Amino acid sequence: MIQKLFDKYKELKIPNKFTLQEVDSILKEKYNAVEIDKQQYTHLKKDPYINYEKIAKSYKLEDKDVLSNLFSDEEKNNFIEIIKENSNYPIHPEEDYNKALEQRNLQEGRLLLIFLESEDGKYISSFTLQGQCEKLYNELVVFKGIDPDECDIQNENFVHYLEALLKAGYIKE
Image: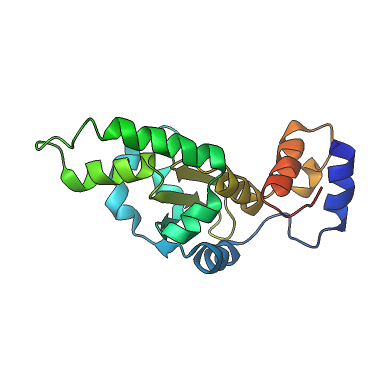
């Protein structure tokens, strides 16, 4: 299967890496993403998996139709269960209501947050997706891309990239 994916990959006319500008256009046009100010998320400075200073672009996705089309049936079923569970636990009055509501919206599939990091200001060096969405995760893997010298089917990073191309719909089986 990997060899077939590799053969189809060679036929693609997509860049090995998308520029931040290209990703910005795609996220806004395809997913109705809204750019947000990373200053609203200074708590991310404490996250060991995010280099806050390198965050170049941040987005939120909250369009119900877009989200509905993005989520798999399994993800939608998970959200139904989480919504049922959360209904037993109202937001505590001492909590920061807006932050608590945002967390709940992330848990329940009403919101996705994307933080794109860049080492050079041109390409994605890393990303963080908050909220559960395999399809968008795979598209972000495609956007981040892979170095041409890593394009070897013995390389597990390249195999992961090929699988992301398939799951994001860039390669058809």
